Structure formats: structure tokens, C-alpha cells
Image 1 (cartoon, rainbow, N blue to C red):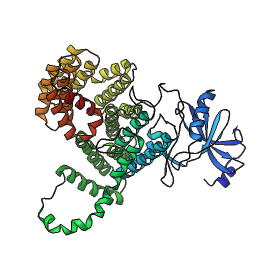
Image 2: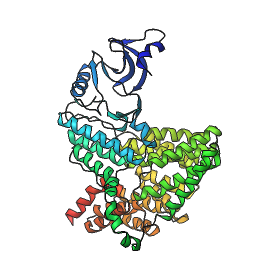
Image 3: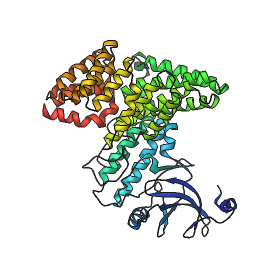
Length: 507
């Protein structure tokens, strides 16, 4: 909106904070509410952050931290009042909202920009301490800006941050920000080992990744000189599955451009994108863009067929799978869990909906438990959905749930019956997990071996057998298994690197 005409849209003077007139609420969080407001003196829009509670100390910390920073990618603080901060107003979206629709290169550009801004802040003695996609704004011109230094001045050693981006115990100060930058980089699709030394190193790492196409272009002359040799060199081929999916997706996209409301085509394209996530996430591919694409297709289809149980089930399944992926990498899944549960409840009579609703409830309980909360209500609701265990999948999922509750004998019976009916790679892996949780590392290793025999490219079985071998002192075997897991899925590096280092040091 043109700020010179902003007042025309206000029928009467609104609530004031200092000299600023509140226009509308644009967001709220644990510490305050953010408004768009109007500055009558300078005739401009501003963002006003008002604290919900009287907390002058925190307000002054945020203001002191942010006001000293002058950087094109950090939101500027204009003024501090007794219970508010007036800041630069950024018309746009958060990175959290925009990320799913961005190509991988653009996501990496945003994180690289933020890493440079964080490096600058560290140089000024300011630590953000709550880096996450929701605190990165993307303006209408595509510029990324870091905001919300509300935790920057909190006492060192205090618990602060957002689960999933908060550094583990033992990391504080600038190192906590660098940890969060690593999470952001991997979530954006960065491959390889993200540096953990400084924000400047993270920025340089991402800059090298982004400059690779330009470096390759600069080598065009050398490649042309070697054309005769290149013509005889074996050509790498795209994975046949990925090639087939890409061709089918392109064909469906062309058809949908002509007839955008064809539900069967939207379902087909969503299925391709879901299949690609299932195939790729075990091989190191970031599935978040495909989850977003599949969800968008099914939402469009629901616009044509509102309330369709089939479409609600399919969308609920996608949202559940995305929540599972986020939990593995320490990203808050609760929004996906809630939306998935809502879809699956509406589609509860559809085949498989009850099982998947139990799964999303189980996953929410796992997340709560990882944060020190009580998962009992979620686990109880999940078990009700898995009962009666009339399919191998329900038996397998109920067995996993019971192992989390340390009901190991009951879990063992569920897994035994499941695997008697179906030689499932997931069943063998989760049965191994149950044995490992019960303290039987040798028994767990045998189950993981059965999973590997069923599918040698199933990363989780290699990963878990490595953990089991490390637990019983087989360091050489553990290192071998963990190395194979990383070869198959390089994105596991931040999770497995400490285990691999331990196994190598000890053997």
C-alpha cells in the first residue's frame, strides 16, 4: 500500500503506541505482537512490536542489540518506546512461508545472505540466538532481512530459541547461531558438510556452492578443447525412475496448463511427487519441495471436489510424511501434525486413514517426548487407531509404539506376527530398534541384518546397525555401517558424524 495514502484507508484514528497509529496486526509470537502502523511525522509505514507482558528489560535488550546494527539484510530499528519497538516495515513473507515454493538455488541464496548478516552481527558483538525461517523476511523485491533479536541480549546460559533450531547443550554464544545456520542450510538443500566454525565460514561454504555454475561456465573453453576426448567418454545417465517421473510430471504440467481443474491429473502429479519423496529422502534428497508441490496439487483438487475423502486422505498422508521428515532433522512438526490429523479425521472412513491418523498422533508424541513433554495422550490415541491390528502395517506400527512405551514383550509379539505375514524392511528395522531400546544390541543387529538383506539401499537399517555395533564395542563394524549410510544418504552427515568420529577414534 502507498504509505502517503495509508491514512485514507483508516476511517477513524486507531489505537496509538506513542505517536504511531496501529493499522493491523501482522503476527504474534511468544514474546509480543507485531503490528503494521503509521508514522504521521515521517508519513511512512512502520512495524511495531509490542510486548504482551511488561518486560522492560527484555525490550531494552532487544533494542540495544538491534539498534547498533546497520546492515542491508538486518531490519532497522527506528525508535524504542516504553512498551514497544518501531522498526522498518517489510512488506512480504517470511522465509518459512516462501521456502516451499522457492527453487533450491534461491533457498541457498537466502541462507547465504543471512549467514553474512549474522557474521556482521557477531563482529559487532551481537548474537541472535533464535535463527529460524520465521525470523527471516523476504520483501517484495526478493531481499532477505533478518529480524527479531528478542533473545540476543538474554543472559548467557539461559534457555532460549526454537526447538529444531536451538543448539544442543554445550553450545552457546556465536556457536549457537552457527548451529542454527547449519540447520537452515540443510533445510534449504545444502549438500555436504556445513562448516561449524563461524557464520562467515557458513556463508563462504554456501557462496562456493552457488558459484559452481559460474566456475563451470568459465571453464567452457577448456571443455571445448577436450571435445574429442569427451565424445568418447561414457555418459552418466539419470536414474531411470527419476527420468520417468520427470517426463510424466512435465507432460501432466503441460496438460494442466490447458485444463487446470482436471482432478485426475492433479492426483497423478501429486502421486509422482510423493513417490519421488519416498524414493529420494532415503538417498539424501531434500523432499520438502516435492511435499509442498504434492500438497498444492491436492489442495487445488479439493477446490474442485470439496470434502472428497480420497483427496483429504491423500493430503493428510503428505502432511504426515513431511512431519516425520521434520522430526528426524529436529524441525518443529506440530503445524503439519495438526493439519494432517484434521484431514485424516475428515476422511476416517477411507481405507488406511485410521492407520495414518494413528501414525501422525504417534509422531506428535515422539516430538513431545524429545522435548521432555508427556506423550501419553498422543500415544493412547495412536494405539486406539492401530487397534484392531488387522493388517501387517497396523501390527508393525503398534509394535513400534509399544516399544517407545517400553512394553517390549507386547511389541515383540506384534513384530513377530507382522513379519510372519510380510517380509517388511521397515518391520525388521523397527523390530531392531525395539531390541536396541530393550538393551539387546546383539539381537537388534540380527534384525537390522534382515532389513539390509531385504533392501541394501535402505539407509536407516545401515544407520541403526552402526549404532547397535557401536553400543556393543564393535567399532570397526560400526564405522563401516555408518560410512555406508552416509554414502547412501549424505544429508545424514550432521546426525552421524559424531558417531562416526567416535567409532574411528575407538577402533
